Length: 253
Image 1 (tube, helix red, strand yellow):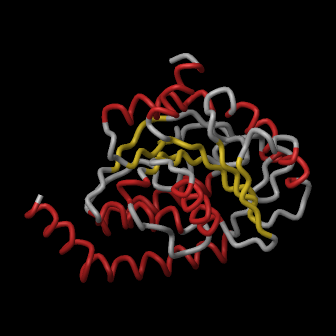
Image 2 (image 1 turned 120 degrees about the horizontal axis):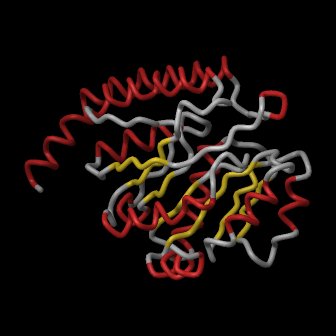
């Protein structure tokens, strides 16, 4: 699919691209520049960055929509603000990806082809976990998250932690993250599954820099505790709400 055709499809299907951004001054410029070749609609949520991110974003002020606030609130909160802005602007879908450069803009046509065939699905990118620079902690965390997602929804996904996703905002209606940090992305998957929104996985490429060049805002101890607490709560809710809700929706669909 040519870049021009990608622009046409993004407009036709009312798709915006959404980047939650926090302290990513070294990567965000190249990320935005690559994305603008594929999308005419780009929303960046500056999640209280304290480095030079704001200054970099000013270079693109005429080509992006910027949502910004002073205090860092976390990725889940940034997604919520981005979703709300997308709906306010009349978009039906939000294609999210990370600001650190690990996701390739050249994969956008893959999502566009998938949404043509599955217009109401939540489409989730699946990273190759045999990447030579893939951190071992990411592999463990993803297996951990995949297990609990299956327990809470009876669905299997190969990658429940990727940030490269196409959210069907119109189908999701009022679903927004209730949690504010990294655990929000798992929460959204589970709640969409409970609402019988089809979740489709497709392979995407990924770039991980060498260890010495790698930056991450993931806090292993704190965020792992938050994710574990969320999984405990979701398992309880799966029994009293999730599975009954799925069954009722299937009976009346």
